[in-house]
Image (cartoon, rainbow, N blue to C red):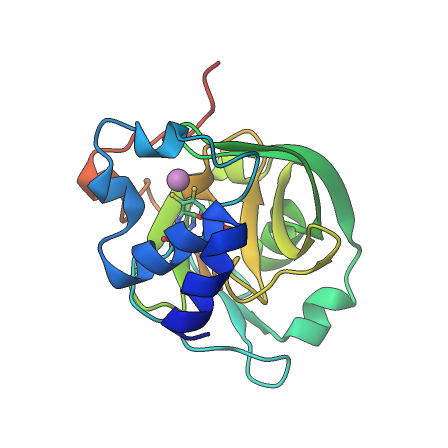
Length: 213
Ligand SMILES: Nc1nc2c(c(=O)[nH]1)N[C@H]1C(S)=C(S)[C@@H](COP(=O)(O)O)O[C@H]1N2
Ligand SMILES: [Mo]
């Protein structure tokens, strides 16, 4: 989508203005150290975040998710593989650490724990690292956090497939954690010994992204 289209859309939806801005400039969270912009009355709408300027589109034909690292059974999944697995649905809020929140969002996908079970993590594995096909973003959580039943490899959100702008075709959704743990454009799940700090942890966010109310 071009900037003109984003600008026009911005007339009706503040989130699209942020989308355009966050693509033009640094991600909004780095431009909003006080968190005040995030509290502007934009409504209960998702902001579209990307720490990179543009992200290549992946389709059902091209998408691959690899599970690797300290596992007995590394694997590569296509979108069809993931769609054919049992789907878990959740209706849970999405909350960015900067203050905005979207209530009761519909999510669906494969539990991360199901993929971890198939991979058979070795005894040394204590954490999970996520990679994005944006080429830059990484995140992590402990293995026990990753095994929670409310952490899903999401294929659907808001009643349809995860759109490109929301990190589709596949993103993480971790219901009990701030949004930065929900890696968009998911390309890799790697079992590691210890958590490896990710993009936002290097910029001051907590390694433990658990929401504290
Ligand atoms: N690859 C990638 N994943 C990401 C981000 C990002 O910039 N790049 N931003 C994170 C942050 S801080 C939030 S709040 C959510 C925003 O998700 P949304 O763009 O669908 O609203 O995505 C998270 N996952
Ligand atoms: Mo965020």
